[in-house]
Structures are given as structure tokens and as C-alpha cells.
Length: 314
Image (cartoon, rainbow, N blue to C red; front, side, top):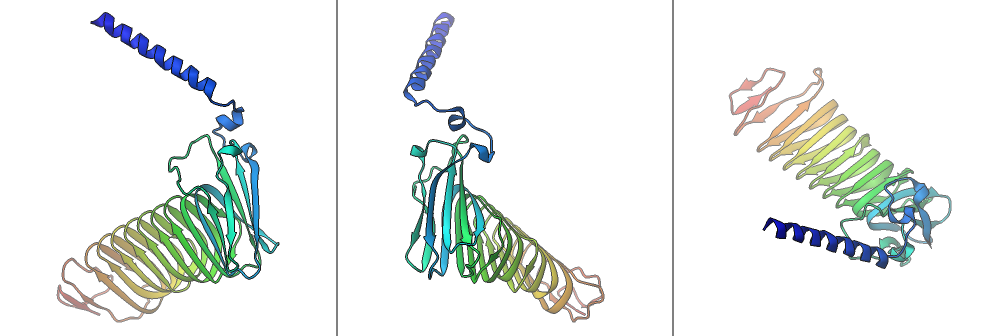
């Protein structure tokens, strides 16, 4: 039996070798850079597609892409321009296209059946040039991949939907910003806008913000620093960490944890805890009235309160 087993192993190895040799003959010859490249250097990339649309009367730009490396860049021209770079055979590429119906310019994939397991030897980079003069509405729907901005954005309405991947933005100024992170990682260096941020899973971080804001975390993490304005924050699960300048607002958790450090309280603060933890730090010299009602759990304060274990007042 051992002898037969050895023969079977030898036959199997020979079959694998023959199959590999056959595939090597059948596959087209590729250069080293096209076939195997683990480098992230742009020197491996070649420009394969350029497309553009005139801005004219358009009041919205929509970016709907997946599995790409995307860079937003400024241009003085009154056109929206896309440059597409790849490190593989252009015949295997599904190009990015620009559609325009007059009021909306859409930048999208032509491959609707995405392979969600990208090959490590293939790389695509998309440069999107946005006019400096454009201050209307911008929608970004990134299903997967990476998007970064090398420019500040000044907009009317700004909508972001991140299903997976990473988005990194610099300074954003807008009348209203809506952010929906289903998964992935989003960071904004500075956001001056009314904010509606929702995280189902993943991470959303705003390093310097101003404007009234709503933060809802179902799971994952929201981290905001130096935010000024009226803030409403709610945690179902996960964590919200806020560092606030001049602020007021309400904090609610049904599970998970929420912490807020406030430099200066400018209005009422309300807290509602069903389960989980809420921690709010305010300056010791703050003048205020306090009232707390407890069904379960405890409230800890740095000041003395009157009342019993169910009702506290100061």
C-alpha cells in the first residue's frame, strides 16, 4: 500500500507540472511591470483614459466608484476632468466614464459586476479634477477603495456614503454635510458645516469642526475634536468621543459609551442613558442647575447633590 501511495503522489505532481506548463503557454506574454508588480510607485502606471464634461449649468457632481484609488485635485478650467492610470493591459480595463444631463455630472464605473477580491498585481488610479469655481453640490458614493482630496472643498450640500474603504479629506466648508459610513474609515481635517453623521460600522473622525451637528453611532466609532455648536449624539452600540469647544446639546446611549469634554457650556445639556456609559466633563467654574433621574445604574458628579438614589438635584 505504501508503494501504491508513492506512485499516486508522483503521478499527481506530474499532472500539476504539466497543467502549469500548459497554462504558461496559453497565457499571453506580459512584461514584468504588467504581470507582477507589488510596488505602489506611480512609475508603474500608464495613462490609458482621459474624459471630461463642461461644467456649464451643472449644480451637482456625483462620484460613484468602487475598488479604485481616487484623488480629487483642483483645476482652473471650467470642466470636470478624469484621468485614469493602470499598470496592466488596457484590454482588461473597464474605463471610468463621465455622464452629463446638464444639471448633474456623474463619474462612474462601467463594470457593474465588480470583483470584490481585487488582484494584488493590478492597480488603478483615478485623478478627478474639480473646478475651483464649483461651489454647488457634491455626492461621493464609495463602495470600496480609497479616496483622498488634495484640495479644500467649498460647497452648498455635501453627501458622503462610504460602504467600505477609506476617505481622507482636508478642509470642507458647506451649508450642510451628510455622512453615512456603513463600513470603512473616514477622516476630515476640518469641517465647517451643519453636520449629520451616521456610522453603522467603521470609523468617522472630524478633527476640527463647527456648526450644529447630529452624531449617531449604531456600531463602530465616531471621534470629533474641537467642535463648536449645538450637538446631538446618540449611541446604540460602539463609541462616540467628543472634544467640544463652545457647545450645548443632548447625549443619549442605549448601549456602548459616549464621552464629551466641553471647554465652555453655552446652553442646556441633556443626558439619557438606558444602558452603557455617558461621561461629560465641564469646567469647574461653570454655573448651572442640575437634575438627574435614575431608573437603574448610577450618576457620579464632582459636586454635591440633594435627593435620593433615584432623584438628584443641585
